Image 1 (cartoon, rainbow, N blue to C red):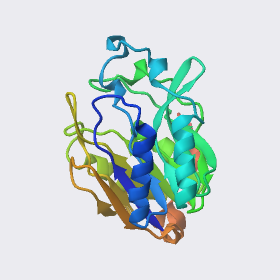
Image 2 (cartoon, rainbow, N blue to C red; image 1 turned 45 degrees about the vertical axis):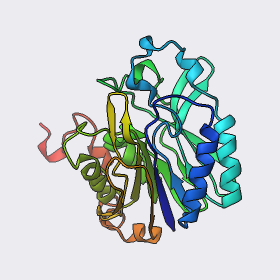
Image 3 (cartoon, rainbow, N blue to C red; image 1 turned 30 degrees about the vertical axis):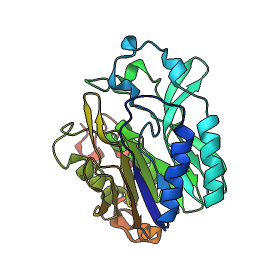
Length: 282
């Protein structure tokens, strides 16, 4: 199976050609032989949370669209035409709330579902609590044409319990739409974090990042894929838009130490806060 990571360029302004950009990116990915295509966070729009919501003239609701909606439908049509499983990301409008959402589209164009980012941060350049409600979709794993796929949207990758929930549902690959900047974390931390997660859980990870300058943010790029042993098997260059394609064998998940050992030997009844082993109880 071939995975393509679309390392999209930063967007300085919103435009009306998001659907066209998505279609072109899928065509380029299909040209590399891809079966699964993963896009970064806010795949076709500016990174809106760069500014506090209070500084925007437009309402946050006006920046969002429903799922299904125009972009989802355009991507689904193209996915079916090209036979691709697609994970992308947008700001979703649902009633009077907005979510950071990744629709998951199967190779026949079926919208299998949507994952909403569960954990919402707030710090310099990432004013996300003014834009998104906390996700309410849980941690779904989808049966796709390429295998069992989970999604961890950007900030959610920091939470081991979220990634563990995907592993316990036998996810074989976890797509990570990200908007990560230069110097945001110590050098190499993006890779280190998911390398450990992959080793501990026995799945592949596929992180697609934005690239380049957007206002006062500089997105680092360096999209990558890790295997179930925690090794980086492919990585894009820093800060340059590109499509990275690599081959992965999901059958290797069943042979990983996490599937052979770690997950089998868990003792969740002992992990509760304040739990005391019987031989140490007073």
